[in-house]
Structure formats: C-alpha cells, structure tokens
Length: 115
Length: 117
Image (tube, rainbow over all chains, first blue to last red; front, side, top):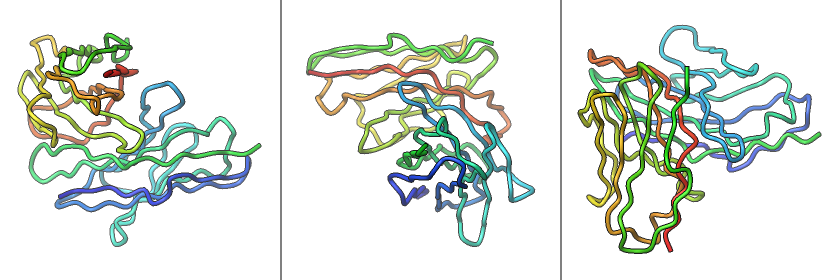
C-alpha cells in the first residue's frame, strides 16, 4: 500500500530564513510527487511536481523541492520565507506502474512564518 | 479559463438524510477526483472518474457514490448521513489521458462544507 508521511504537524520559521517542510513516501512502482498549498478558507493550489529528470524541481512562489530516491523523500524548500507563505502544505504521491493509480496525500504541515 | 466550481458551498443536513454534491471541472479536463478533508485525517481519497468511468476508489463505505457525465461534470452522493460525514468535500480536475498518463497535477475547487447534525 502506498503512503505519505509528513512528520511535522507544524513548522515555525522566522521571516527571511530558509524553510523546509519534510515529506517521505512509500510506493510500489515509480512515484509521481506533488506539493500543494492551502491558504485559510481556500482550496488547494498546486505548487510543483516531480515526474522524472532533474531531482531539484522549481515551482510557484519561489518554492522548490528535492527528490531523493534512496531516502524516498521529497522535501519542500524555500531560501527566504515570507509571512504570506503561512499556510497548510500537503505532499502527495501518485505511483505509476503501467496505469492509473490513486493519489495519496499526507496529513499536511502547517507552516507559520513569524515576522 | 474558469476554475473548478463546486455547489453548494455550504450544506447542513440531518443524520439519515442524503446529499448530492456537484462539481464542474475546468473546461477540457476529463478527470475528476473527490476527496474528504477533515482536521484529523487530512485529505482522504474518495473516487476518481475519467470519461464517465470510475478509475479508482478509496476506502469508503458504499453510502458514498459518484458519477461523471458526458460533459465531465461530476456528482457525489452520500446516503444515510452520519455525524462523522461532516467534512469539507473537495473536487479536483486534471487533463488526464486515456493512454494511462497520470502525471498531471490536480486543480481543486473551493469545496463544499457539509455539516451533519
């Protein structure tokens, strides 16, 4: 069975500091990996994805994520946090093994950027 | 392009009743998925449809059902509502391809907030 773990319920970081939101996964087959963000009272928005190729992928709002196959991780990063980055972040995985597989989301990590 | 729309946005129902939620995907998107979001459980996958066919189904009881129409619009139905069904129900659409490509990101609607009393 596939699974996604986001080990931190909440991450606090000072504005201007780098931030990391952690994600590890477990799948059979090749993983398609995604990060989404949910601002208060709004739906989820797509940030970035890893399909294949370069392990470092860049996305919206200055975010990037690094795929590490040996550690089965896909951590979200940003060099300099903004107060407006405060939101709920979800990691998701969709295995590809010859056909459609369902998407599994992590439980979410609340990011709090402190002014 | 208009985004994913969901109706109604808010709903209050009584235990034992049934409810139907509606989702209109982004124009041209053929895949629609439904999720249940609760504070303790995160996003739980309900089902996914592509070209009117259910592609995947999550681990929910048979009280939860869905369908997709020829114009890609989708509905989900919950019968015999229970208190635990109170949640935010999210619909997401993606382009999808019949050939098996599943690498597309999903675009989410604002959700329907269902409260069961």
